[in-house]
Amino acid sequence: MFIELFFQYLVAGVTYGTIYALVGIGFNIIYNTTGIINFAQGEFVMLGGMTAVTLHGFVPLPGAILGAVFIIMVVGALIEMTFIRWLVKPTVLRMIIITIGISILIREAALFLWGEGVRSLPYFSGNEITSLAIGGVRVSPQVLWSLGICIVIVVLLKIFFRFTMLGREMRACASNRDAAALCGIPTKNMVTLSFVLSAGIGALGGCVVSPITYTQYNIGTGLAIKGFTVAILGGLGNSTAAVAAGFLLGILESFSIWIMPAAYKDAIAVSILLVILFVRPSGLFGNRETFGLKEF
Image 1 (cartoon, one colour):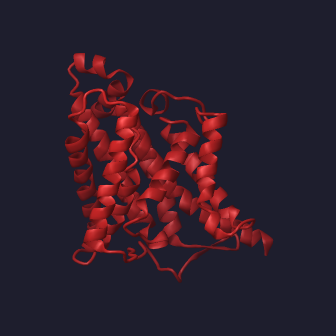
Image 2 (cartoon, rainbow, N blue to C red):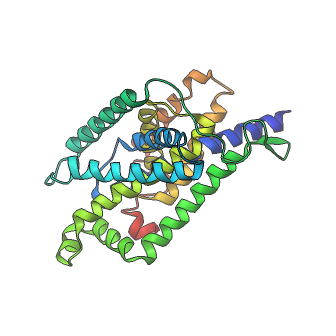
């Protein structure tokens, strides 16, 4: 019984860790290209799930997911062009305030559009009753979907940043934006592209975990805090490490229920963030300048 319970908590931790990892990757993509900490990243996850649920009322599930990812990518581009592009060397504090303001605007818009109701997509395969038996533990097929998609995203990002022209231009922009501009690279477009990629990854993450964790207009703030914790824990700018940090945070949260009430679960992320900021600000995996240069 103890072993089965242990692995059940482990599976739950990996499930939550997947979404934290995807939010952390989104933080790193924007940070590496712009130096901006985008605290609206959690809202992209919420918008992806909510938009997909709405579209699923009119089109099949694959079309709803693809449509939601595309729409949120456009939203990401519009946010960058409206609120970010016109700024000239803004301070870190100013950018934090702007992205928090964007997060509030998105959340209130979502409340207006969808109300306070909790929504979810259907399982990609099977349902909440059918599950796989792995080592005596019942695992939902959706958990395997979320884990597999997270791995695919990391691999595709590696390929994109290492072997494509756009990826190399983004790496150059991350290394030295002024030098990249002198070489003819449209740096402003690279910043927009970083928001597009970040929004798309967040939206896909929101779709994947929606059948398991459900989605609501106000989940973005909590996800932003945990995604930022993951980004710091892995070393800000290191997206591969953010995946490992996401799983670590998810597992710690899951097992924390054994020793404290579930209501305190969210305090784990804040506690870890404070400890890392005090003890090792560069994160567990060291200080990587950019994942474009060091990791991808």
